[in-house]
Amino acid sequence: MSIRYEPGAPAGEGFIPLCVPEVRGNEWKYIKECLDSGWVSSVGSFVERLERDLARYVGVEHAVATVNGTAALHVALLVAGVEPNDEVLVSTLTFIAPANAIRYVGAWPVFMDAEPDYWQMDPAKVADFLEKECRWSEGQLLNRATGRRVKAILPVHILGHPLDLDPILDLARKYELAVIEDSTEALGAKYKSQSIGCQGDIACFSFNGNKIITTGGGGMIVTDNEAWGERARYLTTQAKDDPVEYVHGAIGYNYRLTNLQAAMGCAQLEQIEDYIAAKRRIAASYQKALSSVPGIVPMREATWAFSTYWMYTVRVDEKRFGMDSRALLRRLEQAGIQTRPLWQPLHRSPAHAGCASYRCEVADELVRDALSLPCSVGLNEEQQSVVIANLRSLAG
Ligand SMILES: Cc1ncc(COP(=O)(O)O)c(C=O)c1O
Image 1 (spheres, rainbow, N blue to C red):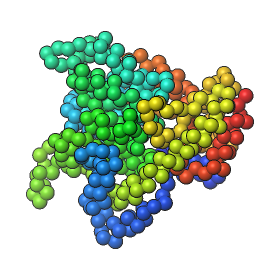
Image 2: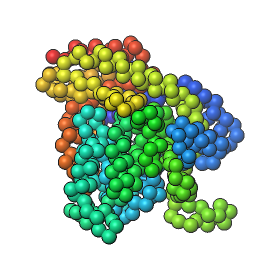
Image 3: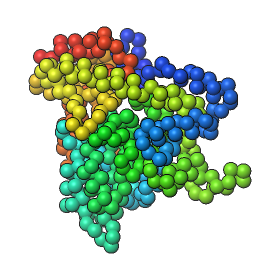
Image 4: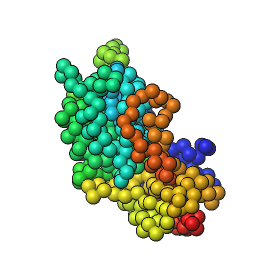
């Protein structure tokens, strides 16, 4: 696959891109302020402002900016007390970063299946796993098969749609597990009218190039837990106890976002409601046009959800459409339209071979069928009509 598939990369001359950043606000102005003032690095007013603005937007007490979403997940796992050899239940249908972050702390992912309606982590299977596959021993929840302590759930809200969070939070309370929400793809989404990122114990966002707002690369940890927020700030800034004498009280990380990047983030966050409105308009047009195309099954929004439709995705039913999702990808590519499949489910990832998984059959079907369509905030009506016309003409 070419470099065009890297997040936020321009699609190339004449291509309708999958999902590229939108820069039309104060980005230049704020970045110029950093350059003019010399505040370009990891301290500066824009870092603090982005933390403040994002905390207010999500409705949480504490926000800590990081170099990217993966670093945010790494530190969130540490502050949530996940230790080497613990297990963390995580969605199998997601980009690989959360599973990698679990390994960074020496813990083990246990991959959980997606449900078929909205393609998110299936709470019923999580409940089954905890009830049937785990047992209590001396105040600890242990996986019967591995004997390891189960410490946390790391559900991932994929594609801009929230997962069904209440049953997960109930299970977490019942089994005394921390909930670390990977909200990297769902900034601005809501679950039962509440923002994604304020309901679990701690949550992470990403400002990667293809995300709903971008800083080029960046991330954020959010939590209402003051001690966790302080610990996250400490660990992401090299665990510095004395900045003059360079005394460090723990092994920390150089994970702080730069002021330059935060400047871009502040400008992007000012635009987020417009961006979400654009994404939802694009989704509504696809929904209307594609529901009559045989074999194309558009993504849906649950009654309890407000989706940002960050990455608009359909299922391709090979029998009814006449070709499978990968053949369709190639045909659309020939027509100058960039699309992409979802991720290899993590229970099949060579990088995580040997890790446990629990009845992950739905994710396999979703990955076989799914194709994400062009859905940049800046996608215009003419471009979207070209995508729709191609899908219509290829159906058969
Ligand atoms: C679900 C998910 N988790 C984590 C990440 C990691 O974020 P970053 O690329 O900012 O490290 C991403 C995307 O990039 C993602 O899609």
